[in-house]
Every structure is written in structure tokens, then in C-alpha cells.
Amino acid sequence: MKGPLKGPLKGTLKGQLKGRLAAKVALVTGAGSGFGAGIAHKFASEGARVVVADIREDAAESVADSLPGESIALSVDVSDDEAVARMIDQAVRRFGCLDILVNNAGVPAPPQDLETVDEAAFDHLLAVNVRSIYLSARHTVPLMKSQGKGVILNMASTAAVSPRPGLTWYNASKGWVITATRSMAAELAPWGIRVNALNPVAGETPMLQTFMGGESPEMRQKFLSGIPLGRFSTPEDLGNAACFLCSNEATMITGVALEVDGGRCI
Image (tube, rainbow, N blue to C red; front, side, top):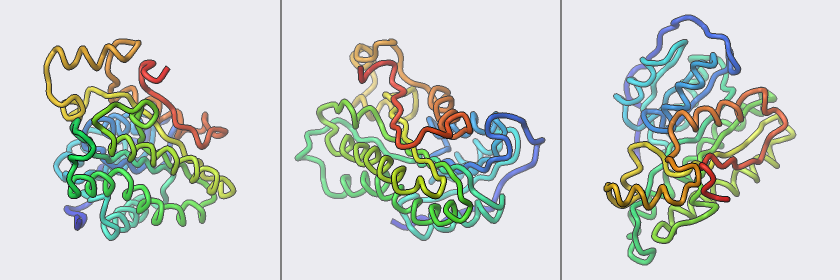
């Protein structure tokens, strides 16, 4: 999959904010909507300079333009090595460093019998949900090692902890994310690099209809019945959790896959 970066860097200094992420540089993939946009907004509100990366250029620009502080928008295919390398390079050239990397970009899968998923769909799922984290690590870890610090946050899912039937290969891709997160945390700790993951339950995002296999009051109620707090997750929920794990308040936390799930995995 080839997906070169497109469009000029965007961003305007609108006044540096104070906050839990003050002066930190954060790159969020898949930030053009949903959880990624929620994380970008929370980080910016807490003083971070944010790189908004998404395969959809217009979506990335829209989010970047709406943020306080300084931000840039990048269009990138996170499954393409050359594009990921340029994404990291452009972020560092613009801001001088990279303190936080959020590997949020991912693709859902509709409910389907595991043996009927074709190879193209399987390959695309792994390219975006799995390979992208490997590629970002290749180009970000050397930088963070040289800095002697850094935070990587990977987006996993409750699907990895309590898998639903009909989503086997998606469940497996998110299980890989949790295992990779824990292994990365153990390996990178000597360089002061923390690595954690978030496990969101199905959320009020554009992906929800795909996960449910359709949109209807009955289908929504079926999913909600498995969430003790009685609601889907929101981009704000994930932004709040991500901000904590990426802030100095969590300097002793690494290798954790935090469930943001309203109790679904109890």
C-alpha cells in the first residue's frame, strides 16, 4: 500500500497553553475523527503541540485547525514504511522533538464467520492495526532513545480481552497490540521510554455501525446490554485516559493495557 504524505504543513501558533502536557510534542495517528480526534483535542487543551495525522487530508486539517495552541496536519498511510518515516521526520523538523506517539489509527471489521474473510480484507486489517505499530516503532524508538525519554500509547480494544464471535481476526489484531505493548515496555524501559495501551469498548464514533453490523435501536441495545455503565465510550473518555497515561502523573506506569469500557470486561 502506497500512501505518500500530501499537502503542506498546517499550523498556527495561537498562544501556548499551560497544562499537564505543556510544551510536549505529541503525534496522534487516525486523528481526523473519533477517538483520535478526541485525544488530539484533549492533548492540545493540556498544552501539547499536536501533530494530527490521518489518511484523509481534509479530516486532519479540519481537526488541526480547530485545536488551540500549535498544530500541524499530515496525511499519511500508516501501513506504508516510507510514508511513516516522512511523517516522523516532518513532525521533528517542525517541532524539534517528539515526546508522545499515539498509535490510534485502525480499521474495524464487520461481524463475519472467520473462514469467510478473504485474504485482501485480512491483509488490510493487519497492515493498519498491526504493521503500523511496527513501522512507527522503527522510526520513533531510535529518536526517543537518543532523547532518553518518550511515551508510546497504542490503541488496543476490549475485543482483545473479551472477544466477540464473528470478529476473530480483528480480536486477534488487538490481542497482538496488547502483547506488543507489554514487550515494548519491558525492552524500552532502560531508555526511559514508557509504553502503554488503551482498551476502549465500542464507542460513539464512525466505526460503531461497522462493529455492530448495522444500525438499529435493537442492535444498539444489544451492545449496550453488555456494558454495565450503560453507554458507549466517547472520544472524550479516550482523550482523558490517554492524557493521564502520557502525562507526568503516570511516570511509574508502563506495560499497562487500561480498559476504558464502562465495566464490559469485569
